Amino acid sequence: MREELAGFTIGVTADRRRDELAALLQRRGARVVLAPALRIVPLADDTELREATRACLERPPDILMANTGIGMRGWLEAAEGWGLAEPLRGVLGDAYVVARGPKARGAIRAAGLYDQWSPASESCDEVVDHLRQRGVSGQVIAMQLHGERQPECTRALEEAGATVIEIPVYRWAPPTDPAPLHRLVDLVAGRLVDAVTFTSAPAVEALLRAAGDRTDAVLDALRSDVLASCVGQVTAEPLVRRGVPVSAPSRARLGALVRTIVDELPRRTVTIKVAGHLLTLRGHAAVVDGELRPLAPAPMAVLRALAQTPGRVLSRTALLRTLPRGADEHAVEMAVARLRAGLKAPRVVQTVVKRGYRLRVD
Image (cartoon, rainbow, N blue to C red):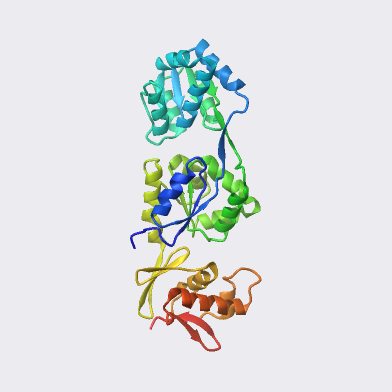
């Protein structure tokens, strides 16, 4: 198949660039579930930002930590509205500028400034280590925040003798409509998505908060059947800390994130030979002799159960456990019938009289 992700369902927790990421995945055949975990909102009251800007003008920073592109642009745009853009660019132009990642670097250069250093990991910890090794005692550091305060970074720099001016430009807020996020939690806990993408560490925490008493079920799914795919190691850190294996590209870019998913998901599939056919199980579909056959959740659940031990007979009672609560043995028969019709290969699923069903391997 040309569409590498055909048959897979992928959750997208991003907000600002969700459409771009969804388009990249859909172009490769994936079914996408949009569920923004957070949204970025400008500070309703810009008093703190104005005061921090004036502090930079009164005591020009020796070092600028530019953490995000959207944050740097927002700061400079706000300064423009106050008539302080030129003075601010003037003092920042004399500072040693650290851009945490390529987006921050782009915003810095678009403003006519020049960055002197960037961390390979795009992590704040690496920035702090670099600055401490360089020496910050007696220096003023302007730290552009990215949504939340970073007390550990601030404390480490202050303990090294620096004065830190925190620049709050925006904050993280819950999504306007939380229903899609709760729906994604259900899908992850039920292992009805194949992967979930994260583009920020706060989005990881937001998904787990939304899970509530199902947090353990969500984490169990992410540790096994559902791929956690993060845009970079900084984003992945909350999951790694909880023992979740993470797929992440070496460079934090959406295109690279999609490529890692394209590489990883097909490797996680099960392929078996049954009744003269080559059968591959994907998230919401089976591939029969190279042809994609989309399946509803109940037939797909039955197929997965049968494929765990091809040739072994599973009773209706055993298959009933794979279906939603409240289903009866008639629902099993319906799921098997729909499975046969969906596969368009009726000999694949064999009825064993008075015993149940199996995949025909002979």
